[in-house]
Image (cartoon, helix red, strand yellow):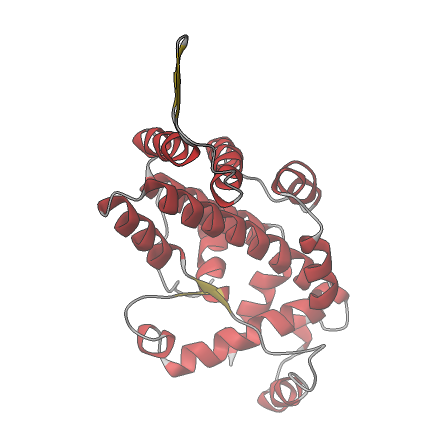
Length: 253
């Protein structure tokens, strides 16, 4: 397997390192620079080829080892991207920049906004992992979008990802399920007032949600969440062996 675009995590075994290298190819890390500045243009072009080639390998319409000459490779490349059903594709890794937005909310004493942003990030990454695996296995993007639209988070975690052979860290599951409840309370706020009566008192909805968010972030490590999301995408790549075959083919030319 060719050199990765990010340093592999040494705590993974060789199989995970190979998956990590593949993960770094199919997901382009976003940062302060543009994608083309973070990664050379030639590498971006190669990355865009990997997924459509992997789909053909997975479908059995292409055998990577049978592409032996530059002419054969050129014919293959020229056949790609002819329609929306067979596009060049590249997934973006926006975890780091989104985590910074969560931190900014916390710095500005808005933990409830941070909770909504963090929920949005984690669900988006789960959706991306599902779309990635289903896409490589030949499902149409419109069909995937329709399926995701009608699925709640619990279904994605407990049914869809296991069916796709994609594992999720337990702590990420627990955090997401807790965030789901909190996020729903925040965005569907019923605006109950603060109440005071002989037997006691009760805070208003805003104060209660803010307090819950503060407590959640007291026990939530954002670096751990980022690492768990990386592991989620590593698992998605490992569930698609044709990705590594496609990378090997592209790197040969």
